[in-house]
Length: 480
Image (tube, rainbow, N blue to C red):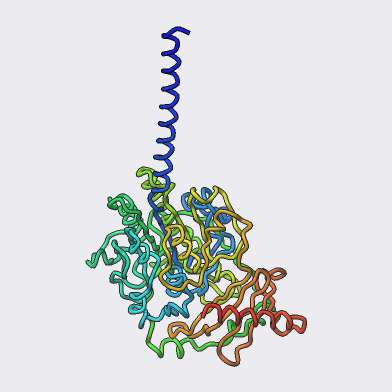
């Protein structure tokens, strides 16, 4: 073999060795970069008083909500998401802490005391900030009338109590500003501005808390002509349904009980001449959601432009549902029935969630905190009642809860409703009122999904009642 051939063979061998070493080195760099990938950004979007069924992805054939729907279409929709207290302030505190209201103590919407309590909450944004996140709160706080900055937020943009839909006054970093425009648009603009900021190479966590679709349900001027032909058809109410709900249907002297206390948190904003019939009100809910949907679209665009979309967890939900004609009630909450407890819940995070996923398991608002802390690799600093839904995001067959506790406490601002504890299983709903003289309620959700037939007095139901009472007591002890 000639010297020239030997040199050629040796050169090829050296090139192969160098190629393997380069490949190994690149593999090491790629692996290192993967392991050192920045924790996910978080955008948590919450609306106010949005019952399920208002979104296109939920089967509403009238609603035009393509951007909100995109969260679920490119992620996951939970068909059985519930809040554990169906009321604004307690529910929001539960979303933020992972705890039941009897633990975090934001138990009602009364104006006294909540300001102080909500300054003490150990929220998930507060814990993430301590772990290196930049955090922002944009929108409606609504745990007390005080709109001053709560602990754990680098960026603060909020307003007192319910605020106003039109030309609101806001608290922007401690400065009160008179704004011109529509509240939802203003919140959207502030949220997009925050996404576009320099976050000092830190991950960010932002809460976008909308006033929509809370009463007085005022849409933006540009959307007032949407859905002009919309007709809302509520669930028919039977005599059997009403007879089985003596507390709901009892005579009540609202003037004597409500206004004598003089503790209304704030006067309601006027409807500005818009109709009060069900079709107009639900239609206005859909019109309000058009503005929310536009904001979600702007957030998607900002995240895509900055290359952050797929490393951002986007969650969309509401603080409680509403009775919108069910059981003869319209535009009311606080009760233990499914339309009030159930809320929309959509999650997008491509790293874990396959596009178009659907889950039927019962997930709760107290599950959000442990989920986000786990995804950010942060250990909880307080006891948590909820459980992380990370396993459910990846696998529809993981073992999951078969029952949950819900609760409601006495409110001076709403004395018609009385405090209750309830247990909901996959089949049964048992409601126990905590004051003497108010009969309990039992519903077979499998055969009576609309909760129209109270079985509490049926002899055949007594064995189920005893089992549910034991389960309820066990859940109360577990979550004490």
